[in-house]
Every structure is written in C-alpha cells, then in structure tokens.
Amino acid sequence: MTTDMTTDVADDATARAAADRSAEVKRLQRREGWKRRVPLLPALLFTIVVTQVPFLFTLFYSLTDWRLDTPEPRQFIGLENYGSLPDDRFFRDAAWVSVQMTVLAVLLSLVVGTGLAILLDRKFFGQGVVRTLLITPFLLMPVVAGFIWKTQMFSATFGVLNWLLERVGVEPVEFATKYPLWSVIVVLVWQWSPFMMLIVLAGLQGQDTSVLEAAKVDGATSFGVFRQITLPQLRPFMELGVLLGAIYLVQVYDHIEVITGGSPDSKNLPFYIAQRSTGGGNVFGLASSYSIIVVIATIIIANIGLRVLSNLFEGEAP
Amino acid sequence: MSDKTGPVVGQNRPLSAFLGLLTWAIGLLFFFPIFWLVLNGFKDELDANSSPKLFFEPTIDRFTEVTEETTGLLSFREAFFNSMSIVLVSTAIVMLLAIPAAYSLAIRPIKKWRDVLFFFISTKFLPIVGALMPLWIIARDLDLLNTRTVLIVLYTGMNLPLAVWMMRSFFAEVPRELVEAAQMDGCGLYGQIRSVILPIVAPGLAATALLCVIFAWNEFFLAVQLNPVDGSTIPVWVASQESGRGNFLAKLSAASLLATIPVVLAGWVAQKRMIRGLAMGAIK
Image (tube, each protein chain N blue to C red):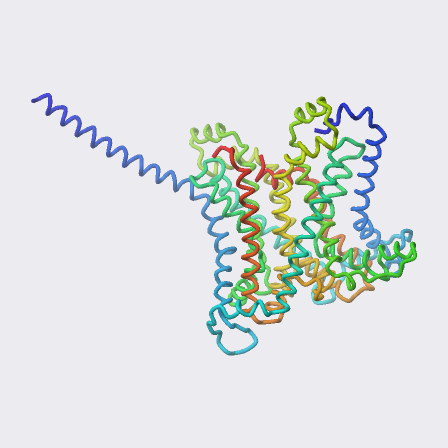
C-alpha cells in the first residue's frame, strides 16, 4: 500500500516533470525555429512586397476598363478584357511574335552553345582565351549589342554584312527593316549561345571520365560514346539552360527597341504591353489583361522547368 | 576531363589540330562585332560613317568628346554617375539581405528551406512586364517616377532572389563543424557570419555581387519605362542617342565602349565562379 502510494507520487512527479520538460522542449523548439527564421525574414518580405504584390494589382486592373487618358473613373467590367482578346489582332500578332522569337532564339542558342561547348572541351592552344572571347557577347549590355548589330553589321550603308554581300555581288539589304524578326533573333542567339555554352560546359566537365574510357576500351566510336553516354548526362544541364534562357528571352525588350524600334513583325508581347500602357497607350485595364496572359504562359513554362529542377535536388541532404 | 580523348589523340592529330583551329575561328567570329565596335570608337566620324574600313588613323577624340560633353537632355557623365550609384546601392542592399537569408537556408536551415528557396527562384520566373503597370502607378503616387530611388528598390527586388539562390549554394559548402564550434564559443549570428562563414565564401560572395552588378548595370526595360529623364541610366542614354542619329556612329561607339567595359572586365575576371554559382545552385 505504502509502496503503491510512493510509486504513485513518484509517477505523478515524473509525469509532471516530463510534461514540464516537453513543454519546455516545445518552447525551446519554437524559439529555435524563430531564431532560424528571423535572418530569412527581411529578404523574404522584401521579395514578396516588391515582386509579388504588384501582380495582384495587375490582376485587379485587368478586370477594369481603366484608361489614364480619360478623367472617367475606372469601372469594374469583369472578364470583358479577356473576352476581347481572341478578336484582338494586334494582341494575336504580338503573341505570335513572342512565341517565334522565344522558341527560335532558345533552340538555336542551345544548338550553337552545345556545339561550342563540345569544341571547347578539348585541350588546345589558347583554350582559355577562346572561352573568354566566346562569353564576351553575353556580358554585353543588350542595348549596346543591338546598337552594334544594327548600325555596324546589318546597316545597308555602313554594315559589315552588306560589305561582304557586295563582295560576292549581292545587292545590299537593310536587314533590320526587311527581316526584323530574324535580325532580332540573330542578335539574341549571338548573346545567348555563350550562356548555353557555359552551362553545357559545366556538364561536360563534370562527366565521369572512367565510364568514357571504359567505353573507348570496349571499342565504342567517339560518336557512339557521345550519343549514348555524354548526351544523356548533359540532358539536365541542357534543360536548365533552356529554362533559364526561355524565362529571359520571353521578356526581350531592349533588342527590339534598338534594332527595329518595335516594327509590327518584331513586336513581342512585353513590347506591345509597354507601348499600350506606360509607353503612352494609357489603356491600363486592357494592357493588364495582356500581362496576365504573359504571366500565365510563363507560369506554365516555369512549372515544367521547376519540376525538372527539383528532380535535380533529389539526393541532396536537407 | 580534357584527356578523355586520350587514347585517340595520337591517331587523330590532324583532326585534333583542325578542331582547335575551327574553335579559334569561331571564337574570333563571335568576337568580331565587339572588335569592330572598338575600332569604330577610335575612328573619326568620317571614317566610321563610310563603307567599312579596317585601316584608319586612330584617335581618342571621341572618348574625350563623350566624357566632357555636357549638352543635351542628360550628359553621358551624369548617366554614368546615375548608373554607378543605383547599381552600387542596390547591390549593397541585396547582399545585406541575401547573406542572412542564405544562412537560414544552408547553415542552420529552417524546416522548409527547399520550399522557400523555390519560392525565391520562382519569383524570377514571373515576367517583369506583368508588374509594370502597378509599379508605374505606385511610383507615380509616391512621387518616385524619374528618381534613382525607384530603380534602386526595383533592382534590389530583381537581383535578391538570384543572390539568395547563389549564396545558398556557396554557404552549403561551409563545413558545419566550423559553424558549430563558433556557436559553442558563444558566437552570435553576426559573429558567425563575419568571422567563420564570410572568409570561406568570400569568392562566391564576390561572384554573386558581380552578377548583381552586371544585371543592374545592363537593365533597360524598367529604366526606360519608369525613369526616362532625371535619373536615367547608361542603357537609356545609349538607346536615346542611337535613334535616328546615324552620323554620330564613332562617338556612340566610344560611349558604348565606356558603358560596357566595366561589366565586361568584371565578367572576364569572374567567369568561372559566376557560372558555377548559377549552375551549381541547381546542380551538384
């Protein structure tokens, strides 16, 4: 009896102590959790306020008929702006230019960049110098890149390309007016191939050389090794390049402004949206609905890309 | 990695030499437009505005013209100063915010560090044009249109996610034992970062800062939409000169050179680390 009681009391005490301890542990954990979170908060809050909140405003604007050039107050018109999009020829044209420009520039850059990376991934005299020469276009200010190509390469009167064409007896062409879309794409590929090259090069240099050598010893041809071993290993790198490239190239504006000034055949959605809103068009409501379409399209691309990226994260310790 | 063609090299010397030459040729071809820009910067207008000329009498007059001229809506010098201050201030703020954030994601990670990291990088995926109109309206209502402040804030927002992404990958390589030892010795967050982590990640930090500087220095879209006059930056200056003034080709080439040289040099110096930081953020 007495022993029972003492054990009861003892049990009670240990239970209380355990409860206290677990409360204490929880409190400490919470404190620890906050301690870990605090350094993150300023960056997180800043990012949310500056990069996320404006999108909510855009979404709201897109449901109104807001124009800055009339004194009438904006009215809520629901999805009317979106309903008018399919019949909006200028929007459709700009959207089609966006698609062509992004897809062609990304794919061509990837092909050229991969080729360059393979060439660079061998020992030869002056390897480092050539790599430096090749990445320089990527470092160039886009406005300056456009300026060089427009006035000094494409130009019918002073351009180097036309000078070359004349040597072989072809009439000079004002490339930027005659082929506006391709003029922009050429400059984009010139700037973005080096970027793709650097990413693919990182992949090539991370390869397991023993596998390659084993394949060689087994009598595989260089091409066979490349197609069956190297290429699959490069895939994630190429996907990363395509993702990052696409995200930047959807938004191209600088090159268009400088090279063609936004002529109809080279005007993509970002250019058109800016023109219709802050660039003097003033139809903030309608232009916002264009923006939302761009955002949705980008989210779809990015989601596919992010899935690829998060696969890459598997296996990394938390 | 380079000797993976090892056994074959001996048999294929001519091919190997040919490929080396080919790579050189392509490299020079890629660089040619920039080489041409340099040449034009040293020409006088007459030589620049004629059929392409390889040989001419070089002069540095265009550079002095560009740097000393004060006429026009905005002089090159003012634009250069605007760019400098915007880029340096925004990069400093980015680093101040990104370093503690990277600590929270890599050294003593919070529970959902992966989700947070992906949130940061996903903000880069949203096209800036989707935020253009509210940004313009907010800037107008706060009386910030045409100021440097608005670009400082926006460039900080633009580069912060990228900086967090890169810094995390550099921080992840700091040996945890070192940080724990410092903690045992009673080092606070600030002390740990300053005396243990920063010395190890300094090269990565420099590469990250450089990349932020490059992106901010080259940015044109926001600058031209929100800031077309007083606080104009270098890209806005270059673009505004370019339109319709063909016979200033040599002067504009000189200006373009001055505008790009800081960034190109920085990129050359940091090329290896920058790409590692970008790619390794995702791939280990």
